[in-house]
Image (tube, rainbow over all chains, first blue to last red; front, side, top):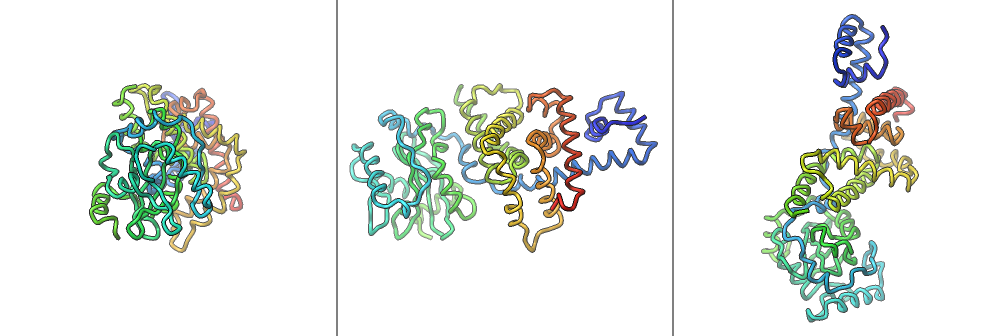
Length: 242
Length: 168
């Protein structure tokens, strides 16, 4: 009797039910060539599994881990989200260097226009650097991502050390999100983007509302894993000095 | 959808992430594309968390979302990814590369040469270890179709991997 490839494959994969399974067993006991065909199928399966197994141990990219971070006090942005327009122009990946002053002024306009009642600009030029001050700067300096404050106007999601050895953190408000890194006692803005409009739906958690541009910026600049709760607390207590 | 069921999905998804990434890598040869796919699927799943029936398999549900997202994506980019395989994998071969790593690269390149349908069955059955029935459910095909697809994929892999030109 001849055996089809599909039958032998199902047998090799443990998918063949009796009585066919018993038939194949008896057949391969008596036929070395058949036995080798089954063995080859099993070797192939093991080889495939081994080729992809290392993916399981690869470090998780921050943007994926971030999507599912613990559903701690979620709706930090909701109060503000109700106040601001639902849709605003989306700012795509960028760095300040490529932006120039006009775009920066536009963004400042967005920020000041949406949160006038908070007083004082949050982001301002300092010696040709853009630094986060006011509520955003304060949140970056003091807030712990591991202990989010419900209802806070600024959420901080992720703290990490970048490739040049600085502490960096991601933040978001109802209108903006970005990455800022600590330099000379100030928070230098590395990336800034409009908040993900999906955050206004309330379906997603604050931690997952970081726009793609921001998560990509983290992926590009992060050195090693993000800080855990203890590391973050330690860094904060040391004034974000390294 | 209550918060607690959404939290459950979120937590279970976090535990599934490594397997989702691995399945993504069987569909998309480039790591970035595979992770994009995982991200899209997780975002869709979170938005539709209320559609998932507790007690059913979250992994099958996620694989299905990924597979559907990949079909959308693959149509859009017209299989552009295949041309990048050689460069990207080539970069990772270094002095410390082991035989197992070299073989893994050859195998992954072989998988990348399969058709979309074949890659999905290989990823679900041979790599993730789903039963034929479970894989057929994920892909929404009868088990006979699944079996013949898998048999053809394995033949094709065998041919690619035993041909020194094809595997390098």
